[in-house]
Image (tube, rainbow over the protein chains, first blue to last red):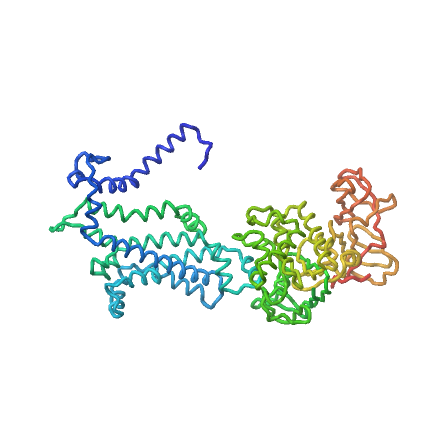
Length: 280
Length: 348
């Protein structure tokens, strides 16, 4: 940001930024504060920005009503495997499309990109049939395999390809003269230099997997196997009414890793997308 | 060290022929410069020697091996790239030792060789830095260090000074030449800068449109260019070339008649070449109208109209004439070059 703004203009600018922040910050604030309010205080009018009474038992109830720790673990390990798998697949595929000359590479890449145009709602039924045939329903395999080889991975491959295209060819040629073969060039030269793009891929793949909702409700049926987005819908009373404070406590715990990922890696995320020519 | 031999080397991309049969023999330990305008094929030829481009036809030998089908790593060459191609994520020391590491050298040997190269190139204090923390000249030296650390048979340089400013380029020119004297490794150096070629080469290969125009020592090319292209390319300011006809002992050009050296037997249409410094100021000389005077301190460069031709003269003495005034100049007959008007080949 320019630093030669007049003090008055700077105050106005910061004021405007604060106003613009409200729609983004308020829902999170409301979620966190409501998670420690008794349910009767949540809908009080006028609403309280700061709880009048604190009720931390909501967090305990989250774990009593459902196997929440297990569900947390399910989401965490699935997201970790999907993230690692997508990084491997997309970096290798992106490198191949960017740096290796093979017949019809551009046409094949276009066909791969077309996968992004097909909504997951369209493919979910055939996928269900396929995984049913493989005996993988009510297992976590569909939630791992679909993102690694499906649309999220295609987008990641696109990001990685754009990065590798911009990598100077002389670096690879120098490595060839230095005695490296294709895989070693990828592993020791291209991949370490692709850290920003790889970081961006890791972040949005993790978030995508963490927030996955449609696939879990189609492929999973037992609460022990549920992931967090699916589990959040289960905090209801006997009549199907939402137990808002408990649900928001669970939502707060669900959002923590997402917030942490963004806080720790937002610079990497922006840099990575900047390298690819995409805008964040 | 090893000799390098290029025999009828051709390169085509689809229907486009880039190199039309190049024959060059480079002696063991020789410093040879490939020079020519952009697009003449000099970098392609260097990359073919390196193994980074395939050879369409012909043979390339390094030492006694035909290397046409060998990978770059198996040719025992080292290359310095135009943009240095230093690995950004590695320190100077790692960059320099990288090729040794991948050839299975021990850590002690790598450390010893890196230290040896760093001492030669004055890089010892920079070994822990990353390329982004270095100046252009330092990066250039690291690129050279990476090349010498392996003790290859041939060094290949692809326009290594083109990213440096003019002053640093002169310094690095000297350093590369000194390094060659010290190590005595056969060197092939590509540049489009004929000053670089003249000052560094044992021999120069002048290339144009995928062909070799002339091979020779720098002064041989300067003093006896084989054709009009070499005459015009080597030398700065460029040689003055006047079109006209040889008639007896005179050369008749548009608006001016120039004297010829003794013994010229050719007749008819030709080109008359004279270098700027081979004009002399003389009251008995030919009249030329001054259009620009550029005092350089040690010499004066004058652009003037001789007959209907714009020519350049470089004089050791100071020239007081102003634009529009007439001075009198004489060509040194011993330094006159004559070229066939049709083929462009030298005829005297």
